[in-house]
Amino acid sequence: MLFHSSIRKELARSFGATLIVLTTVVMTMTLIRTLGQASLGNFNPSDVMLIMSYTVLAYMPTILTMSLFIAIIASLSRMYLESEMVIWFISGRGLAALLGPLFRFAWPVLLVVMALALVVLPWSNQRIETLKTQYEKRGDIERVEPGQFQESAGGKRVFFVEKNASSERSGSNVFIATTENGKETITSARSGRVQNVGKDRFLMLSNGERLESITGTTDLKISEFEEYGIKVGVGALTGNDRMPVNTLATLELLKALTPSNLAELSWRIGLILAAINFVVIGIAVSSVNPRVGHSANLVFSLFAFVLYYNFLNMGQNWIASGKFTFGGFLLTLHGSALLLGTLWLAKAHNNWHWSNLLDRHRGIGSLWRKSAL
Image (cartoon, rainbow, N blue to C red; front, side, top):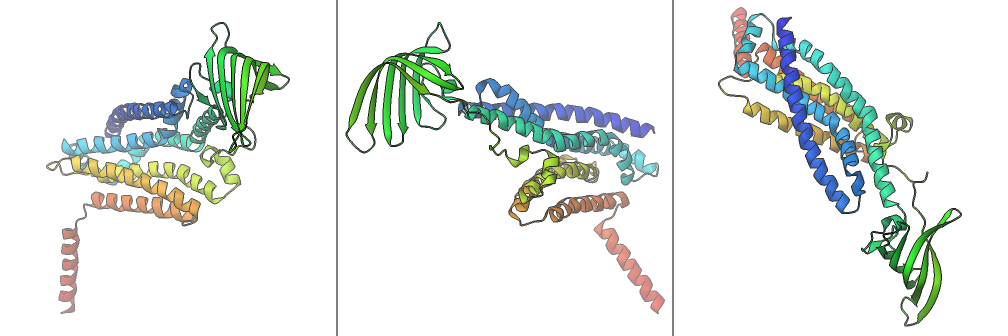
């Protein structure tokens, strides 16, 4: 049908433009936040662009849903304002007949949202968490920045070294302050180098001295050395490191239906159900009076979108804490949203109004009284 093809073309243009704008905004905000976290030492500065990409990828289900929602409202509202919908209604088709062409346009987007929510979302979260953990558990040597005081992973050592231009594995004027097992030690040396001994890694210091004191006492032990080795292990991920629940694959969540896993499942499934509901809601809220304009409807639609996703977040916490069951929450939130959207659509489709319903009720009442007489 010509009308169907024209509305799908307009939806495609509006959806593409909205998607580009929203993605650009999210990328900018994510980049600023990631740079701030990198400056605090949460991420490796060289991984900023990579982490930003993973983060934006995790936001894509929400971005796609919002782009589809805005595209539907913008396209249908314009058709109302320019009286194109009058032709649709005159032809004998109601507002509910738009469900067919809109879902034919939206189903590829809904499939992408499903794939992103169930597969890509946990994978991107896992990659972000892995990069973050690897950077936090890097070895003491990797933490050292030439010319700067740097704290070790456990916070028990403070390093300072001047970089040697001739080698990356050696440096001059090394300073190490250590607090461990009730002892405070200050070690300084003219030079130091990194050396592997078997599977262990040592920082070999040359021509220095060592000051050792016991915390709470005045005893001080001073010693000089020509060469002294300090073991510096490299932190690595182990099998005992517990990853957050949002990094687990969907199949792993289904294997162990704990409250935290069910809460995460409610979020992922909720992203899919919300995208479907917003297609119905978008058709319902797009019906406007051409004399009034569509600004109020657009503002209300964005408020409804934010409110819906806030309920998704709160529901995730409620399920994890045991306040709501998994099925009960999905039925309550998404079922209620679908029911309200369907009723709103039915009202616009049948042109229901409170005054019409009252007049119809009064007419039925008068006919009943006449028949009774």
